[in-house]
Image 1: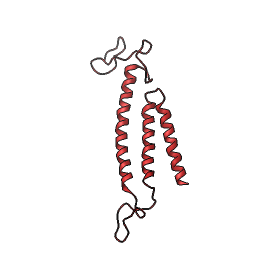
Image 2: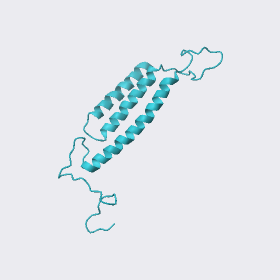
Image 3: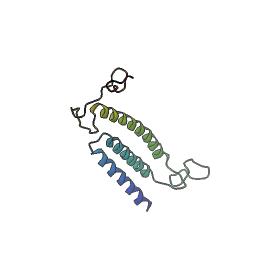
Image 4: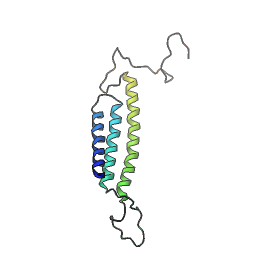
Length: 135
């Protein structure tokens, strides 16, 4: 039952991540990559043999085999992957925000057009004030 539940969860995360990646919106792509990284992390963790109530530290009097202990390698790999995926998600969101701000559109393949002009940041790094107003 647990194996079926974990496999279903990995499948749903993967399918949703791929679906979001194939959409042409800049904010759906980082979300899709995040869901795919969750699916891969869960897959790596499950491949390391899920053990309930198994200590990760070797104790005296117990044979040092994986039958008596949890495997720490998949846990270390998943922890490293979580840190890397968090950094990549932050980078992709920053790029998506910049692309939306420059293009004036949320589409991945959008080009600046007359209908949605890009906002000029000016010298101070903020949007220009409307006509007649002072900063």
